[in-house]
Length: 334
Image 1 (cartoon, rainbow, N blue to C red):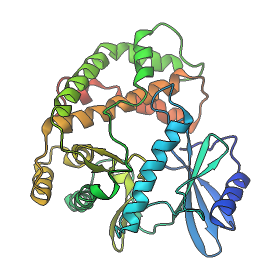
Image 2 (tube, rainbow, N blue to C red):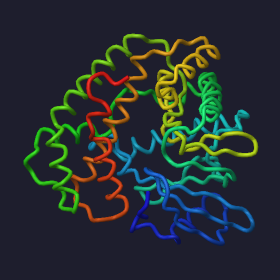
Image 3 (cartoon, rainbow, N blue to C red):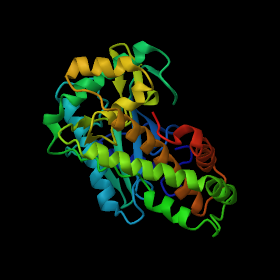
């Protein structure tokens, strides 16, 4: 996130790090990177760390989801990452457990803090993989993750194929007359959705059809990272590592593979060769379409609420314009 929480000071973080990890902080700096979590760069002595804070209200998948349910979902995903790391999967960048063995520490009843070791290497921005070798290296990591399913099957959550903030997207589609906001992007956001409302409804119906098709083929569940895009990888001297495990779930393998395949048949062929599992085109379509619809829903939910002009709301407006483009997903996305 680009804008730090107004009600969370550096002193709050420093106190929580000392209480949870016995970490005596010398320097702490907010890092305006990523989307979803808040990040701080931390130095204690001559050791560098990376702290993340998740806002449980912002991470709700439905407007009525409780903070406790959001927290449980996050803890399960990060516990999975810790178990994989502790089992010897060094490419899994997992939280450092606190002094009492927890993967997160609460700050009040709204925020959860996690602490990570600093990872030295080449980071990447959001976008397509630039080189085939990058994709293949990440694919090999994902195969290892998928084949480790039995280690965490009792802990990991199950993908229910839901679109985050779908209830808020439907509410917006059902009422395109009421004002959004107040805020600078409310009127243009509502007008943009209004222009594309019919196409969005068609895309949602297509998504529901794909869910029925994919759910009708059980027995293909594996542990998935969930978002293995380029920005969630770091190239290190020991190979590529995967970060941001907060959405790890049991799901069909295509939940990971669609981000790599992108029309590249070699990805599916290599995955099948490594695992013996055939890649299902409908499942690739489902997850590709869900990503776009979830982005639309999240940005709509943000801009319908009262907001101001910040780096985050500008990113939300830019994202809505990018994803609310029927050319991305009209008809049958392939």
